[in-house]
Length: 323
Image 1: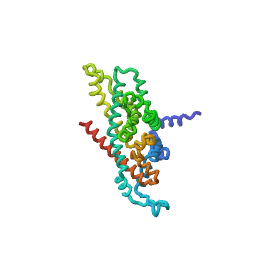
Image 2: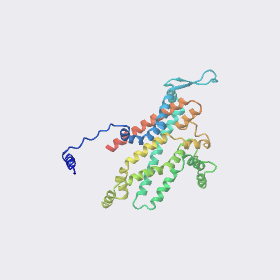
Image 3: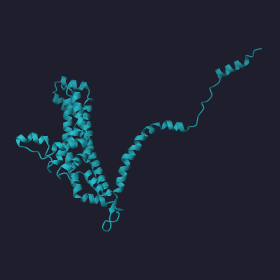
Image 4: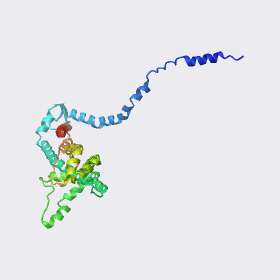
């Protein structure tokens, strides 16, 4: 005999009964790890940033609070004494270091606007509607940036040399000789190398910003009869203002870090480029003398000044944009 009561009872339980409550599992390690997964991707950058940037800055600031003391005739090993203001006071009173700061400030005030103006002009020329061979000119303008700074300085040292300068040889028929390593001209000889190396890099940033301008805006301006100059002045240049501010800040920081070009030209400059020509070279001289705390103090002062100048520049440009 077949028993049909049990299946019927089972069918009734499935049709009329409520579903069992979901099982709540306790949150374990993998549940927490799943929520922290984005942090795992950021961890390599955070570790490298802290190790390569934050730690050296903290160590330099800490080292600058000590002073190297030598006793007797200097035959014994020097000792470090905690004196927070000694190195900073010495740096402020150091005429060579303060002169290097003034030299770099003058360098930035002249070289940065000239370089960015040249980069902007190149970007506008390449972006013009009538330009031909845009890829070639973009690549040729960027090639100097691909040359390492030391190699570029070596090439230009040959161009500047009084014995082998092809520039002066070309000017011989007219009786003109350019003293590239004269004390009044050597700073601008260095500026020429920096401009040659970095103008193409900044041009690419500005040119990329020009590509974000809607084509409809430019076409509407042409239909209204605006000339190429009016379009560039009233539409393109205001549109790339953010890129100009960005490249200006990068250039200000780069000017403060000027080291490779004058260091390479120093042996052939005839003494016009001293060991304290720039703040970084001055700090390097202190390191060579074994006075690491003093070099750290110079570096901290330079970093603070660059930060202040960059902050003021951002505020001024932001105010101008809001106006």
